[in-house]
Length: 115
Figure (cartoon, rainbow, N blue to C red):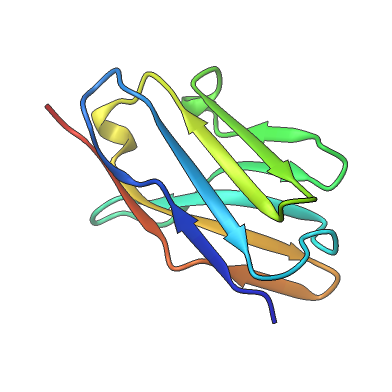
C-alpha cells in the first residue's frame, strides 16, 4: 500500500504561480504513470497532466504551456509547476499513481485563484 499526500495548494492571484507536490510513502518506480487531476466546485473531476515512468509528459490543452509536471523516482515525489494561473484553475487538485495492478489517489489540495 502506498499513500500519496499532496502539498502546496493555497490562494493565489490571477497570473500568479504555485508549485504542487505529491509525496509517496513508498517507491513510485512501480507506477507506470503518475498524474494530476482536479475537481472544480460543481464539476466532474478532470485529468490535468501525467508523466510516465519513461518521462513522457501529457497535458490538458487548457493548461499546456502554463503547467509543467515532473517526477523524481529517487525522492518518490511528483510535482506540478503552475504558472499564469487563471480563476478557472480553481479546484481541488489530486495526485494519482497507477500501474502493475495498482491505483492510488491522494486526498487533494485546494488551489484558489482569485483577486
